Amino acid sequence: MNDESIGQRALRKTKSFMKKLLLTLLVVFLAVFAFLYWGTYETGVMAGKVVRVSEKGMVFKTFEGKLNLETFGALKGTSPIAETFDFSVEKSEDAIIQDLQKVALSGERVNLYFKKRYMTFPWRGDTNYFVTKVERLQ
Image (cartoon, rainbow, N blue to C red; front, side):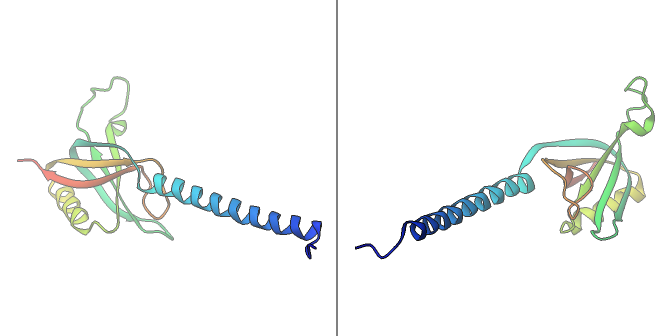
């Protein structure tokens, strides 16, 4: 009656189950990756003077910077170097990079609006903090 043996039926069902399992794992992996890549953990503003903006990296060129918070010893027992804020800028943000380079050279005080991402990726930057807007203070 049935042309299919028990072994063939089991093999077919196993293949079907494995395909569904792999597809489910792929969808879950892509969802987790998308959440970690585009998800925002925190948004905020930091004020100070931009000390440096540089393009760095051997394989992946990223834009990194440092903001001097100018707290002048407000954090007791720490060095002035600890009173800085390290940040990254996404490569596609040309206007922000140019603004940061200008204010770094002029030494003027700025507000940096940022997003903190969940995870760092080598092609994106060294920090979790990404500047989204530069506001020059008068």
